[in-house]
Image 1 (cartoon, rainbow, N blue to C red):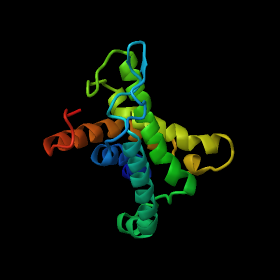
Image 2: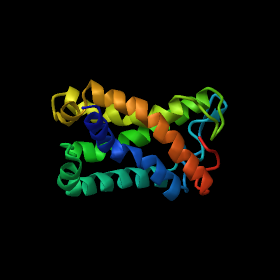
Image 3: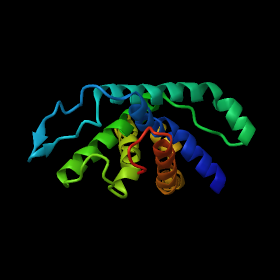
Image 4: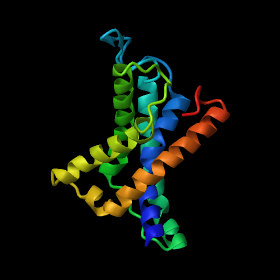
Length: 184
C-alpha cells in the first residue's frame, strides 16, 4: 500500500518535476521581469526567462503525453494502477511548476536573497505547491476531478516528503555536470 501510494504520487508529479530542469537547460534570453525592479531589487532576476518558462512547460506537457502512451505497460509491469493525465493535468502541472518557481524567485528578491542563494524549504517545494495548486483549481471549481481522483492524503504526503530529497539530488547532479552554478 505504501509503495503503491509512492508510485502513484511520483508518477503523477513527473510532469511537474521536469519543467524547471528544462528551463535551466533551454533557458536564456529575455528575462520575464524585463529588468524591472521593486524596492530597489529586481522583480525576478535574469534566471527567469520567457524561453525557459515556455521550454519548461512544453517539456512537462510532452512528458505527460508520453506517460499516457506507456501508462498501461508501466502499470502492468509494477502492478500498480497509475493514473492517466487529463488535458488539464497535461497543461496545468508543468505551468504550475514554472509559476511556483517564479513566485519563489519573487519572494527571494523581496527577502534580499540574490539569484542562486539558498532558500531552504521554498527552493525544494515551490514548484510542487504551484503545480498542485494550479491543477487543483478545476477540481475545486467542479470543472474536472483529476486532482481529487489522483491525490489523496497519502499521495500528497509522499510528494511533500520525497520531493525535497529528489530536488537536492537532482540539483547536485546538475551542478556536478555544469548545468547549474550552485548545488541547491
